[in-house]
Amino acid sequence: MFLLASCKPGYTTADEDFSLLQAYHAALVDAEEEAGNTLKSSVYLDYSSSMPQALNQNYDLFTEMLTILEEDKTRFYRVGDQEPYAINRAEILTNPSHVNYAFNIDNFGTNASLLRQAVSLAVRDMDQESLFITDFELIEPRGEVTRPNCNGINESTPIDVSNWAVSPFAKWLAAGHSIDVFSAPFRQEGYNKKANTSVSQDQFLFFLFFTPRGRSNSMIAKCFERGLVRGDVAHLNFGTQEYKLRKDYGNKSAQEKGLGSEIEFEEYFENEGFEYYQVLRSDLVTSLEYEEFSAERKLLEGLTLESKMQCFATPQLDIKVTDITKTYAQLLETYINQEELPEKIETDGVAVDELFQLKDREGKISVHVSNPGLIPPRSSFYQIEISLVGEPAELPDANMRKYLTWKDKIFSSCMPVNSLYGSLKEAMSRTQLPQDRIFTYYLELID
View 1 (tube, rainbow, N blue to C red):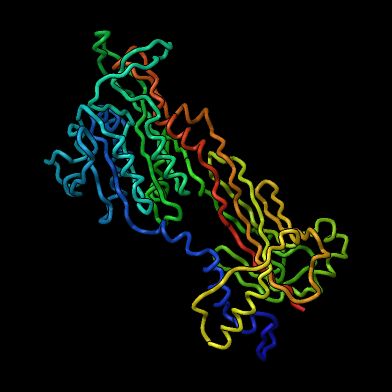
View 2: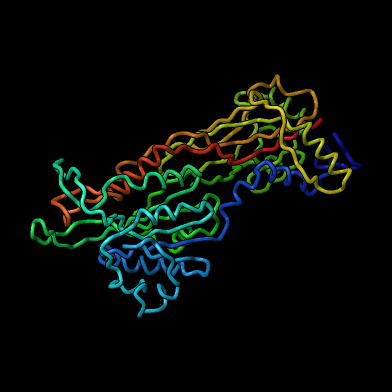
């Protein structure tokens, strides 16, 4: 241990403002969240002939959405019977006489909808967030195809009812990014030429948000801030990052914080994503002899995982314990000798997973001493990482079907259109929770 003359023991003697610890933690995290904070954003707008009634019946939601997204760095794209192409923001937002002016519903009327290309563009750049406003009715110039109708009888339709968006969805989700869907109902009136009759059918206007992991101030966050999910607008989330940790120390004293009963810290520090506790080794050993503490040997507590991941109802957690005593001592020596932070910070150490164990009781997280005999008879420093475990998705099938599917009666007698539902369902079936570190404890035991 490298100490300077001070009344404070341990590593914090030479690291009074915890600069080295913060630099060490930053190296451990390895800037994995930085990529999502770039400011690129794009809006893709479906101009096909099936959109006017969808937009008319959800006009307030549509116009509020565009107003929220009216920022200089947002790029807009027209999606219709041509390859999606960029359109000037003035054309879409402020020029009523232009054919691309979005607030004039009569400008929506192309006979084909090349939605496939728009989805591919939305996921092409992993640092870009995108919004696609569409009814997800894919009609391409290739003509009609034959599919089983609502009664299981083969019938032709110009709508591509296959799971045509699986690959781009799966690519985006596999990178740990999120897809959110706002589903707004509307009633589509039309004319069935085959049956020579007027028909009406229930459909949905979809707002598909593609949000990179770690993106701050995202488009969907702005929509929630404005309360756009209201009334009969449903929100469905497909992703692996919708969770947060809440700290609650209950009735613990200021000298305990998240430490188990009968233990107080000598030094404490917290920052985003981690807490540091310095504890007298003798206090921990003595506490293990008390009946109140020894029953569960609860060392650390006070974290609660609050998950909003609709496809991961019960996310599982894992613990990784590393003895970083030697590694950190070497860093500290360099720090003292150079009087500045080391240029390169190593974060390796010795795995000692059997020393502590993790317990998760309905989201309440605690760390316990699993083998007291492994506590060394000397000062030591531990890095305790808590991570989400890569479990497969559990899909809320009933809600997905209700808000993501519809039946077409305009181009056929009755054709189930499950493209969005099927694509998301199959993409999520390929998706697991990445083993992401969600919190780290640094525990220093001193003599």
